Image (cartoon, rainbow, N blue to C red; front, side):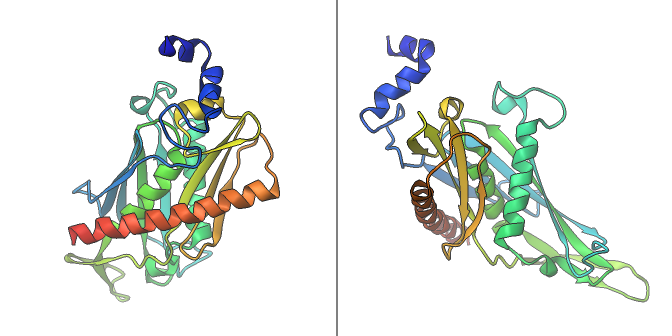
Length: 274
């Protein structure tokens, strides 16, 4: 009976739970799903991580390549994120070139990298104007059950903390780099940006960490990114219902609490493997 009601009237089905200030999966409105992190999942990558947020699963692999620094910034390196939402993760995606949602997710992750100063691009420079590291961060969603942005940001952060680059020396005379694969050093992570996403239901009810079904029924979505200092790094709102300043401040406060929880989780996972 309940399954039939959910299929025939999904909106009313969710409203019946919201009247009791809970959700179909048993969570409170402000509660995030169980989060797990597995670091070093891809042996062939320079850094990697697998993150699960409820049923949503994203794996991130970091591949470092030597490149020429940009002409406009000869002392900097690159970080290039790419989010892939293949058909295997959800029936809503089709084979072919990256769709609009995947492109928007890639752009969002790139904006988080730039605004949060997770690391200094200058640290990726080997020889000014001659040689730098380019970090290609491939994020693939293996299972999509909503809130892929939070999962991608967390997978990227965990993978970067797991990344170790080979030692490289550069000869100005020959212009040929020498790579020592036996000697590696980790990246200097300066900030720990964490994304917290929320959806608006029936124009006024706010829910944290929406599932795929909740995202489809929502009238608006909002993602807030904060760091360990409580600084607002980024905010993403793709349209829909507007929020009052008071409600927005409340979501930022929730995001700050979420950041602290995730930061502790990452530290715990790293300590367990060292």
